[in-house]
Length: 131
Image (cartoon, rainbow, N blue to C red; front, top):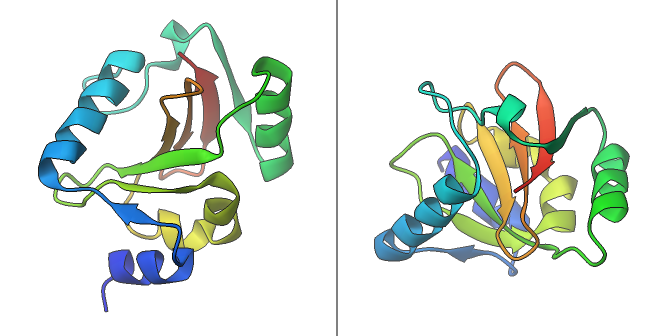
């Protein structure tokens, strides 16, 4: 079983795997919402409202302070281009975050409806920001 398959399994029934055409649409939305460096990282100094976080509580606090009612439905996007994008519940992703981040080096949790992204960089740095 691959790390992706294990991730899908632990996320349970509230996970949706997107087809290639849907994946492209989500990526287009993601890339038009946030500026990226040439090496594939969000260019945080061009995102006016962002912060580095160390805990789930800090992420929730940021969301509560900056968004009246944020969406718990998010897309999980990995830096490995051959992997599908999945949709899941933010709370569930946090419960199994080690399984989610094990799939690939860098991971983004993106909510287009609420306009936030959480970037989990392979060096351990985690940032959250608003478009």
